[in-house]
Image (cartoon, rainbow, N blue to C red; front, side, top):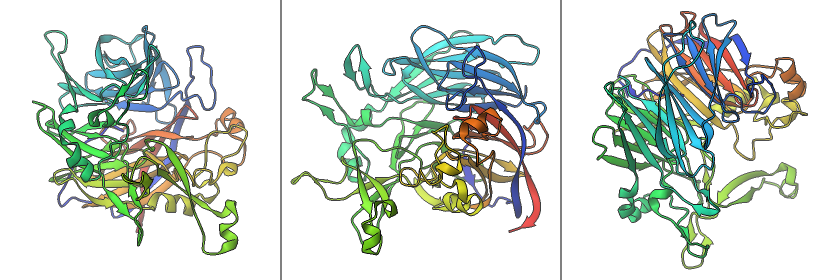
Length: 517
C-alpha cells in the first residue's frame, strides 16, 4: 500500500487490543458491460483520496479503474468507471493519489516496450467524467509509483521484464522515471537506470546479492545480460521530506537521492543460515512500506517474493521411516538451481531457499534488519481460522475449507500488502495474506506487537456459490489501506482490503476492544 517513512523514537503505543469490525463491501465488474465473475482480477490495487472520500481501484485483469465513494462506509458505491483503451497499452499496474492529482501506470501490451503514466484531476461527486491532465512515457513495465509529500515529484519504478519483442527475446534495463511537476507547462522527466552497479559486480555478489541471468550466448540472436538488468525494481516509497526513494528489488533494498539522483546505496536483505547445515535462505523482499514514527528511518518490507531462475523441489523428511516413505506426510522446500553453485563441479554446494513469509523492519540508515515477525502470521491465522489455514483461492468448485493447506508447500501464508498509520496518535500497521486474512499490529519501538486477525466470508460452500451469494469475502488479498481518524469517512480509524479473486473491496473499522494484552 501507499508508503510513508518510518522513524523511531520514544513513541506512544496502544496498550489494549485492536480488533476489526466489518463495514461495507462491494464487488466490481471486470468489463464495461457490468459482468461479474470470480477469479477475474477485477480489483488488485486501490488508493484512497481523503478530500473527496473517493477510492480509486484498478484491476490487472481489466482495463478499468473504478471510483468508489466511501462517504457512507456501510454502502460504498461505484460513482464512475474509467476505461483505458489507448493503442498499445497492456496491464494497468498501479494507481497513486495526491491532493490534486491521480496517477495511473500502464504497461505496454508486449511488456517489453515502454509503458506510460496518465495523470488526472481528482473525481468529485459532482463530476460525470474523469479529466485527464496528461500522458507521459515511462520505462519498460512501470510496476509501482510514489508521490513525494508536496506532490512535486512522482517516482515510477520500471521493472524491465524479459520478454519477446518482434519475435526476439529482449531483456530491457530496470529503471526509475522521475516526473517533476511543472505548473507552467508539460512535466519534465528524469530517467535513471542501474548501470552504475555493473562496475561493482564482484563486490555485491560477494555480499550475497544475486546475479542470476547473465545472458545466453547460444541463443539466436545472442541475449546480452548484465548485473544491472538483473536488478528489477518492484516497489518504491519516498521519505517524509522527499529526499530519498527506497526501492525494493526483489531481495535488495536500494536508496536513491530523488533530487540529483547521484547517490545510490544497495543492501542485500540477507541470508538466514540453517542450523548445522550449509543451506541458506534468501528473504526476497517484495512490497515495501514505510511510516513516520520517530527519529531513525526504518523500512518495512513484505517478504513474499517469488523465485527467480529454475526451481527444483527438495523433500524435507520426517523422523521416522514410515513418514519419509509417505509422500503425503512430507513437506517441501523450493530451492533455486542458479545459486550456491560450485564453479568447479557445477553442482549445488549451498542450497538456497527463498522468502521469509513475514514482515520485517529495517533501519534505512544502516540497512540492518531490526525486527521480523517470523511465523506470527501463520501461527495467528492457524489459531483463529484453522479450517482455512494456508488455503488456495483458485478452484471455483472447491470451498475455502476444501482448499485448506494447499499453499503450505509452496508459499505458505504469503503476505501480500501492508500499510502504516496511527491509532490515537500511536503507530499501527495493517497487513494481509493471500488466503484472505487481514492483520493489525502495534508498532512498539523497533518491534511489532500482534493485535488481531480477521477473515471475511463463508468457508463451507464452493467459491462459486459464495461469490454468487456475495459471501466470498476478500478472496486473494493483493492490497490493503489504512485510514486514520483524520482521513476516514467515519471519523474513526478504518481499513480496506482488496480481494483480487473476488474483485472486491471490504471495509473495516479498527477499534479498541477495551481489553489489555
